[in-house]
Image 1 (cartoon, one colour):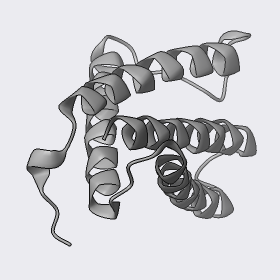
Image 2 (cartoon, helix red, strand yellow):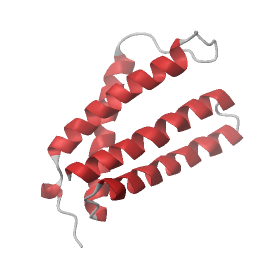
Image 3 (cartoon, one colour):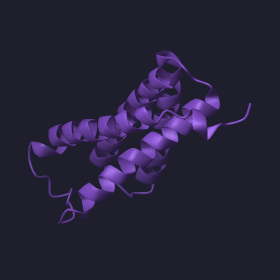
Image 4 (cartoon, helix red, strand yellow):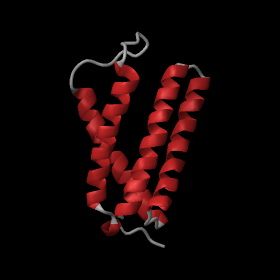
Length: 129
């Protein structure tokens, strides 16, 4: 089976990027918005938002490539692939937490985000592919 980039749904990439941004805004508003925790210091200025938008669309594009390469064309197939990607990312965060590179709270927030959003992205791309 050969990957044909012409078969990738650009509507799915656009929808996935928007989903990623909306979900991230809601998730981090809930997780970090209750009170300002001294351990989570944000960078100043708009650059973090610009980079977040770029990452949302890059992530959606990569998911589209994985979904197309796997031949996943249903909600369930997409959810499984997305969840597997979320697990891989979570394992990397886990390793980093073992070496003290992030707090337990930051670890739980990050893996919660990535497990959910990549599963959702996979499902979206599975439906729209």
